[in-house]
Amino acid sequence: MKLLVATRNPKKKKELKSLLKDLKITVVALRGFKNVPHVKEDRKTFAGNAAKKAVTIAKCTGLLTLADDSGLEVEALGGAPGIFSARFSGKAANDLKNNKKLLALLKGMPERKRKARFVCAIAIAREGKILKIIRGTIGGHITVSRRGSYGFGYDPVFIPTGYKKTFAQLGPEVKNKISHRAKALLRAKKFLAKIT
Image (cartoon, rainbow, N blue to C red):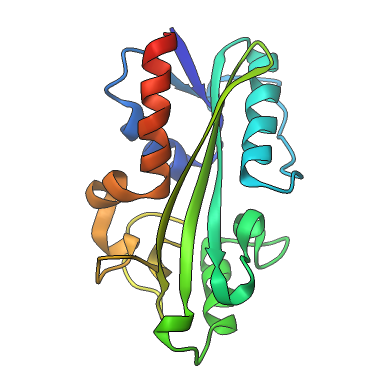
């Protein structure tokens, strides 16, 4: 049985494959498939975007497909960047630009007003139909500057509750146990073990 992980982000793919490694299933990535469209993330929720990706790619490839959509919600910004996390700083957005924009918007705010949470929605689809949608979250707060070199996205500016270091400082071993994606994938693995 093959499971297609529907992402073109190499860092996310590596994280997902690591978290799924103990399943008795072959995890494959999008890279080996031709004519698979780029799915526009135009839904209003993480779950909606994940479901759209999973269904579209499952239809194109004929494989059991896992897709996720995840991002950062900052309380002081009314939940932004939210579903726009990857493109928060505009069309030429990248991790550094997104981090800088976020830190600039929160400049001068005390820690108690810098509450945030990472959200992950995972959708599993087969033959163009959603089999399961799973959600994971982790709370924390935003730092005043970037710290650490591991991970990707907002990892250098997010300190999870109960820790003193950012995800980018904690490294993959800790992050892959406590993150929003780890929580969602743990539940996804239990579901996948039942259906494969």
